[in-house]
Amino acid sequence: MMKVNEIFTSVQGEGSHAGQLCTFVRFTACHLRCGYCDTEYAFYEGDSRSREDVLQEVLDSGIPLVCVTGGEPMLQKELPAFIQGLLQAGRTVLLETSGSKDLSGVPPEVIKVVDVKTPGALMKEGYEGGEPSPVFSKTHFHYPNLDTLLPHDEVKFVVTSRADYDWSIRFIEEHGLAEKTQEILMSPSHGQVEAAQLVDWMRESGFPGRLNLQLHKYIWGTEVRGV
Image (cartoon, helix red, strand yellow):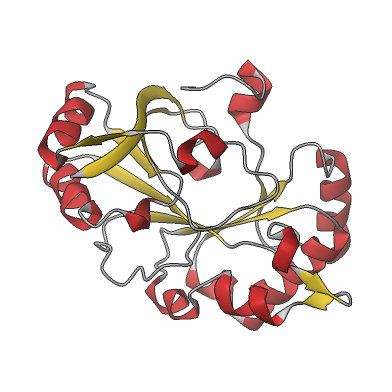
C-alpha cells in the first residue's frame, strides 16, 4: 500500500520541464520540517491505496510526463516498483526528493530532482554561530547520493538568505556538481528572498546554473492546492 495525498494534472512549475503539462503524484509524509514548506498538508493528510490503483489513475490521465513528489516520496516502500511501472508504460518520470534518503535504488531512467536543503531551510538545526550546525550536517542530505547523479538529473537549492546562497555555492564547488549534472537550479524562498536580489548574487558569483522560479505561485498564488 502507498499513502497518497493528491493526484492532479497541471503544468510543471519548476526545473527544466517548467511549463509542460504534467501529472503529479504527491505522497504523504516527510521527515524534514523546512521553514518555508508550502505543502505542510502532505505531512499527514492522505489515503492508503494499492500501488496498482495509483498507477492506473496516473496512466489514465494520458499525460506523458509524471512528477512523483511529496512530502518525501522516498519514504514509500513501494516507490521503486511504482516508478518501474510508470517507466514500463513509457512515461517520463521526475522524482522530487530532498536527497536525505538513499537514492541508489532509483532506476537510472528517472530524472531525479534533488532539493539539497540549506541551513536556512532547517531553521531549528541549521546555523550555529554563523556556520552549519553538526546536526544539520548529519541529517540534511545523504552524501552517497552524489554518486548516483547522472547528467539528466537536476539539483536544486532554495535559499532563504545570502548566507544560504554562499553555502550553496560552496556545496556546488566542493562536490563538483557542474560536472555531475547539466541542471543546477537556484530558487529564492518565497517571501524571504526577492528574485531580483538572487539574480544580483548570481551575477556577482558567476553562478553555473539557472534561476528557478515557481510558476504555479505566479499563476495561482500560494494557497491553492492541486495546481
